[in-house]
Image (cartoon, rainbow, N blue to C red; front, side, top):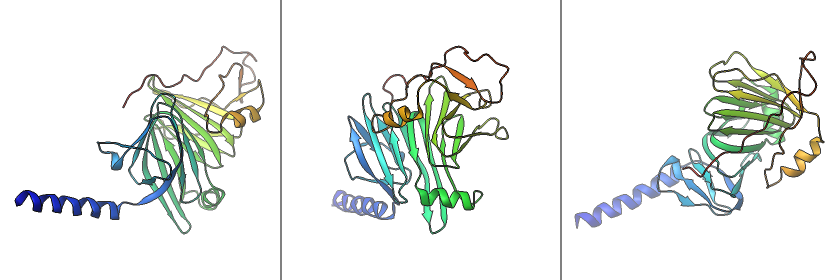
Length: 247
């Protein structure tokens, strides 16, 4: 009898926790193997289209797998393969936007809705949309940007359109602001590099390949902005893909 009462109590406890969970968006595209850790806890559940995403959920993609989340404010994030993100904060209430996505590994593209960009532009101290990695933060002043993080550890931020600020959490006062077509590379013990722009190819090539495929061509030739004294053809820099299937 005690086991029956305990089972009933546990059932209602689960229902109660689900009722109080804050839904922030839905999964709008899935490819391959994707799972969700509700409130960051095991066991995980298999991801499905139109499945709700709640605050504190962790979404994990495996090899050759991807996912897309559309949030209630219209913001869309695309999650690349072998990635892990944590919806650590997402508040959209009237004129307020406070959002932080934690990228533990892998790659994510964020397309921030126009309304949310306007909120940030009108009151940047009160509103924010940030992607945080273990060593860096990238925050919106525009609309469309990519953040990748590898286990080296190295964080790369690339802006498709608009403006983004970025800094190393160990050097919070050394902020780099990026414009469309610019990127920065952040190592664990160094501030962000000065803005870098790709000079081979067209930005449209990036947009074309940043649909659900989330492919970033390797950077083959770059010029650091504000450093004209450096050679026009520095050594190659590549954005390393996340390595291995880890949980």
